[in-house]
Length: 327
Image (cartoon, rainbow, N blue to C red; front, side, top):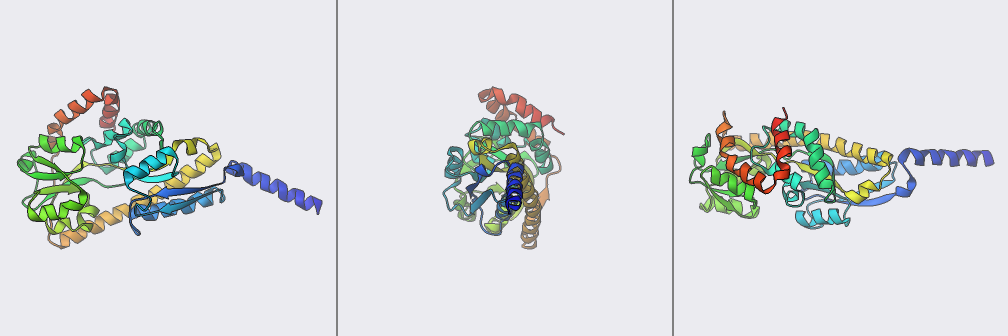
């Protein structure tokens, strides 16, 4: 009996050593704004499952979807302060908090979505992550949020001249307003919930977003031209509170990171399928879509936006140049 008990005890100690210490057992809470069935929601639930599996049950994550624990800005602050351990956030609202993260909001900073991931998985992403970690948010993995393109109810956009005089709804960010202004349009910041009616009544002529948002909101019903400018490619992150992450053993950190990366692979797969489905649906409804053969004129028009940004943030010039130089 004594020999059996000793063997059991030794086995338990060995298991603890592999996991990095049972003393780290914890119940975590996570925030996500998206609804059931959305690629991010499915991926975050998978992350919770993998987290418990890979830590041998030492860490359990309860996910709260649909923004039930507050708005995205509120949830970002909760994770930064440790009120929540985990969050799935867009880098757009993180930009004002961590300057490095705001770089991804520069129009046309990425050539396309694959280029964005090459940057994020390399030195550029490491510098962005470092800046975010200093503000209380450690990115464990990057999620795909697609590319935002222009849509309107009048005509296809193929050149900057096609935007001249057009009233375009943008998110409330000086970089986005500056983008429209430099293209000769009139930026109209407004709440996302107001866009459908504003397009329908002519308060704005157009807007910009990704395929799933364009489709799921019904914007395609009142703005039947979708032009693939891909001017903004802003990723999302699966983030953890910096102090919580730093308090983990190396083995636990590896397990958490591995679970996050596997969830990101799933999210990216589901996102690609959702994008294709949304595009197919709106084109079947009669939406006119067009590829922009040469984006160079759009990119060149952004020179004043970049100059103003880098004058205000000179320390970020090397990061911007690193991203632009990444093949």
